[in-house]
Image (cartoon, rainbow, N blue to C red):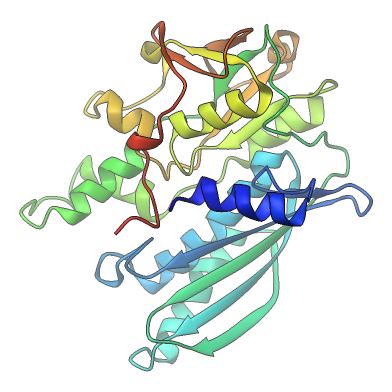
Length: 301
């Protein structure tokens, strides 16, 4: 059992045209909406993250999905299921972190329940006003592939956190990686630049499940080949390419855009291009039609 198979079952059962991107675009209402969950011992371990950082990350991962759609993040609801061993201080610090991450996005409600572990579910809503909304099925031959920032830092930070023998993990350059994992930043400005300046369809996703996964999903949804020069991918030289491609949780944005749009953008890196061919990705001219074995599976024991 894996997430993609389950999504296929849900989509075919509901026969819904809204399921496919990380956000559902309700064009008649002028909004996008997304929901994401964080589960203790699946997405985080309580001894490796503070309540403040957990609240911060909860908000950021949902805002990132809205940014990936091109919409402007506007509202959030958060539902918390908490165990009896937690106290009021946990809730206070969790929402302080959530408020810091939200900035001008309003947290407008949610739900509280008891549970054996911490379960968090957040819903984010964005507006399409003045913006063109993306879809992963919009990549076209000739488009350039661009990214917003470095990849692999979050996964490397998690590795440092899990390495109990690394006594210096909170010092020096290691802190950069740990912060990338615990307190990621949604790429609001990158999203805004593209969505406000695009006149043609474009594809965009965040890299929460890994850069390679995002590229593959765009390629398959658009029925194209995406060719990548891995030497162009921004990353810290300490991090190996497998981690850069498959590590996940960087919450950067990757987009397939027409070349003329690049004149209106800044702070991006071109890492490849879209071309006709079999659905899949090329890394340094080596073609892949399936990378599932390299990806993290939430449902695998």
